[in-house]
Length: 581
Image 1 (spheres, rainbow, N blue to C red):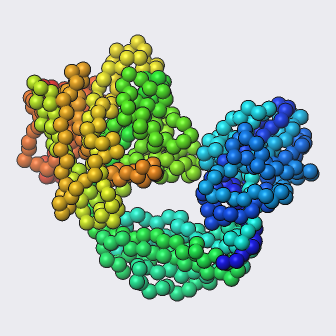
Image 2: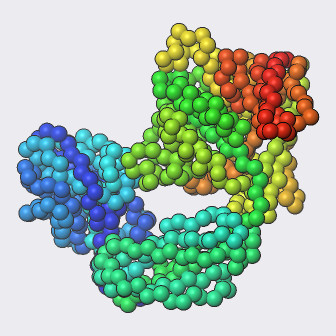
């Protein structure tokens, strides 16, 4: 290859979508961290210039742009913008600095303002270290409070830089699809180089040895950073069920000098059978958090609405500081928050990152599975979407508890469908003990309340904290654990939670939970069930205050069973008590 062209690189992708500023007069600086590894194909290029976008130029002077290895370090290269203009400003650097993809750069600029000026432009993707602002040398991280990254770019020149470069990437496709439904994958076509691309063509191939589709010509001009979308649709019954099939889209364009990024692959897997899905809901809550009881009520409302038997809940006492119920495992799970700090109340649905679960401005750019828990009106539709995800692996658990020795034995059994192998290559089993109904010590907002209790508290992980690898014999696997309960645990309210998941130590978004279950450790006594010569329509549980709850393990509850008498659609309702042991 011999290109010898130039290209502009940054995180804002040439877009200005917002502004930020510092109040008062003084010397203002703005900076962003550029992960050089994102642009490894330009390794060795010469850094010949910089581009800085200003949203306003009134009342600012002495504008200079610079490159550093750290925010407060020395300049590796710098230049002055003699006559700054609103919009993009381009400057030429000395040209003695090479681009090294193994070393991150800090790009920024400084200026003097006589009063507050909203001139610092941001755009593109909000990201960690995407926007820092300083006044008189004191830096403040604005990365999670602005709509994008700082609008600063490097200009690279070298033999490895193509003049024109059209790339393709996958935007979305269904992970699993019912056999026979329409497969629909969306691909993004983008010009990442300086030269314009005047039209392109594409084709796709289903399977490694499948035939190419017809070539489709697209009459559209794309300048640098311009994008287009290509949608591929076909009926999924043309492929065998249960296999992981690649669907490769390939683009071509005159003037595109780099072909290595001209193909993107989506994957198709179809299914005809599923297993019941029980969601893992993990809550982050502490006694220091005055808003956390609100989240407890939000989740309780979901139970009242009838979702209680469709999810398993675990509460981690971290997020907003810690309290007396916090354990080391809880602290480790704060990894799921990402790098921009923690908060409470918060939650995760099956440890899955999805825009549908998040809230607030910029949520589509969030790159972690934790989301804020607010009102039941906003929580319920997101819960419904999470519950609707199909499951292809089942997990069950049985307990054997010796009251005298307080020894608990647990056997977790896992059964998978063949389709699951295409979904997860190395599944793990995690078994956790939780304790319910723990009287608070000093819950914010409830200091004098003697009735407020913590729910589903994470107590102990019996497997590895990230799960033990499963060894299947055919489609079945079993894992066994044993533990002696501490004396200060109320065994009446202890449950074992088991779930099957993936784990990727390098990617918090690749640790999805595929199914979960929970089981109490003590048997119930007294009246625990009733029978009738009729079809059961519904079963509901209530506490003695009349609030609907998840199916209880032990304690005094009311069980409401509704039967159909088989005539005229009428129903018979009976109420019984469960006695605590």
